[in-house]
Amino acid sequence: MTSFILRSASPAKTKVDAVVVGVLAGEDGVSLADGAQDVASAYGRKLRPLLASLSIKGSLGETTRIPTAGAINAPVLVLVGLGRTPSTADLRRAAGAAARAVPNAATVALALPTPGAAEVRAVTEGWLLGGYRFTAYQRDTATPTDGPGEVVVLTPAARKQEVVDALARAQVVAQSVADCRTWVNTPPGDLTPPLFAEAVQAATAPLAKGRGKVLTVTVHDEVALAEMGCGGILGVGQGSDAPPRLVEITYAPKGLAKDAPHLALVGKGITFDSGGLTIKPATSMHEMKSDMAGAAAVVQATLAIARLGLPLKVSTFVPMAENMVSGNATRPGDVLRLYGGTTVEILNTDAEGRLVLGDALGRAVEVSPDLVVDVATLTGHMVLALGTQVAGVLGTEETVDQVLAAAETAGEAMWPMPIPEEMKQRITSSKVADLAQHDWVRWGGGLFAAAFLREFTGGLPWAHLDIAGPAFASGGPSGHVTSGGTGFAVATLVDLADALVAS
Image 1 (tube, rainbow, N blue to C red):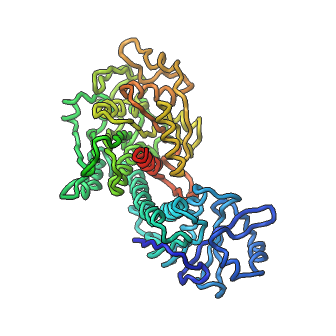
Image 2: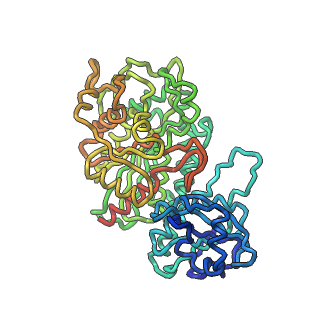
Image 3: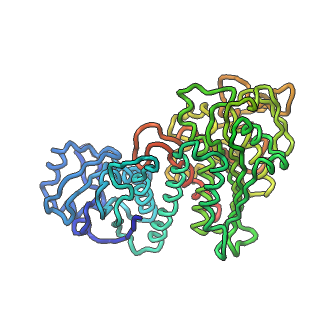
């Protein structure tokens, strides 16, 4: 367990195993960033030729380790690139890259530009998330998994209460993001819907019992789902030997004001997606354990909100199913009746996420929240539109703007997308049911899916986050984002809750 300490001490005189400083890129060469002035003074005239000899460019996330030979109190100096004019998002990425550059250090000092609370938060989150590793299934690991035992964050604002609070908050949010990553990285056979529901119950248990109880957790099994009329969740899950679940969580802290904001979160929890009878190609299936990333994100965001004690109500709905192939699987051409009675014609069993979300959104609307946000790895179309690192946000204009503002402070890349009027015609094109689940038109599939979901929001303020691209990183680590599950959207949802409280 890493212990974080705030100090306003000199990085050159701080006695640790490694000191991390930022390097700025410039037209006339690189220079050390704010926070490292006395390190630069310690090296004096030797610094510029040293940086030049190492071919350091200062590009964002570039890391270089150099022995200090007594020039400063730490034996190792880590230089991490910040680019030209670093934002808080850049600081988060740089700190994440630096965390992987000192795997064996027991104590580290971070002397990055941290003049205030936002920067301290970014550096702390970046460091914790950049050092994340998923090793549960590895017999041998090359390096320690826990990171340094002590991290000193050096800042001139160390004694300000808002900075102290930012450090504490960053650790809570980063832990939830890391736990989200772990769920997403877990092999699908070990996280079937019943096992995922049990994992959620275990994670929420400390806050769902005793005098400090602030969470109420209910798990609906396949029998209860049938009684409730959740035909979407049941239809998607009926091809699997592992039955579906619907987990509902309510966060309501004691003494909550009657007029406190009420946020509803809905997350897609397809624990594995074979595509069903509309089966995926093999090259598209091996990462489909990540199709529950939206569910993991909303649960972990709820936990972070509860641990922070934010004064609002949160109702979270997590439909869980495994989309498999069997003689009992839903067929193209079948009609399902979703929660509330809307019938849906199935045309593509690989477009299953919208079906389970339809049921969960119907449940969410019934608790009369102020706004609803759903998070889902929903469509490949959104990846084609925005790439693998940007999420699409669709819904009512004001709510979309609120989500985008929260994403900006959280350092997560999101972009607004429209729901054109023509989509209404497409989703109502079925000849036998109220809605068509899919229509095989090549263009605008992500927009079609959002229009479909809108039918179940009851006209409430609503935003849909399609995180199909950024929820899972197939390549190597970059900045604070490590390979595999990324925990995307957790921080944004926490910041959204914060903004609702402040408004």
